[in-house]
Amino acid sequence: MARATVFAVVNQKGGVGKTTTAVNLATYMALAGKKVLLVDLDPQGNATSGFGIDKRSVRVSTYDVLAEHKPVADAVIPTKVANLALLPSTIDLAGVDMLLLSQPDREHVLRLALEPARVYFDYVLIDAPPSLGLLTLNALVACDSVIIPIQTEYYALEGISQLLKTLDLVRQQLNPNLGVAKVILTMYDNRIRLAQQVVAEVKKFFSDKVSPTIVPRNVRLSEAPSHGIPVALYDPRSRGARAYYDIAMEVLEDGKKRTG
Image (cartoon, rainbow, N blue to C red; front, side):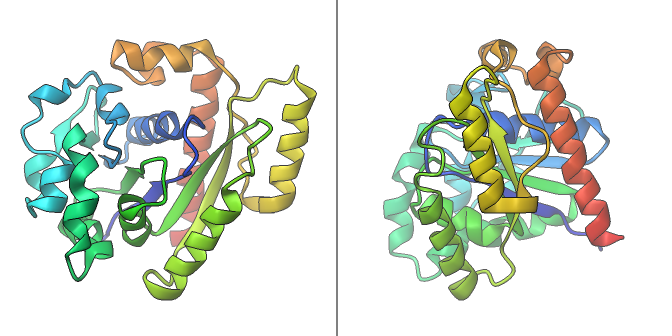
């Protein structure tokens, strides 16, 4: 029986377009006919509100799955996008690190919780929080590979070496097959010379892992979450939407190569 490919969208630096990337890749993969689950693992719950879901109305959340061992099936809710389900987050998740600390297999809780759900989906995307704490560690253990969004600005590579060290440690001790699926350059402004230098630097650092499609700084991408819909439904012709469509197709094509 086929099992979902699981990606964790990670970068411990905030404001790099991580949730935007998770939401829009999941959306375009679902619109391409794949069954997709988006896991909101961030206590801020931006992926949840990005689909217009009122967090106060969420009865079973990621917190309940991790802390109370509720089945993922009890927490998953549909979204406005066909084929795309969401495991929502609430602010309760902020306290889960302390609860997990006393558990013997604390890094494996999410992996074990997602295991039964993997037969129902083609892809699972985990929107990890902007930190390298226990929640992100759970995402790294639960996934097959990571997608790393990097903002094209001065401090872009600051912290990336720390993230790569963490990936190495997880690979050595907890998830030997963990790989980097794709590095996505975000918020690009071609008028800024520094942005062009950052692109060159990231490509030198990650070589063929860098997506050839660069996500531009785009007002429509920023506006879409406030309307509670992904950019594919808000303004599919915008430059930001077209970029995420192309990257989603790259990810699906990579998947075909792996299984073909």
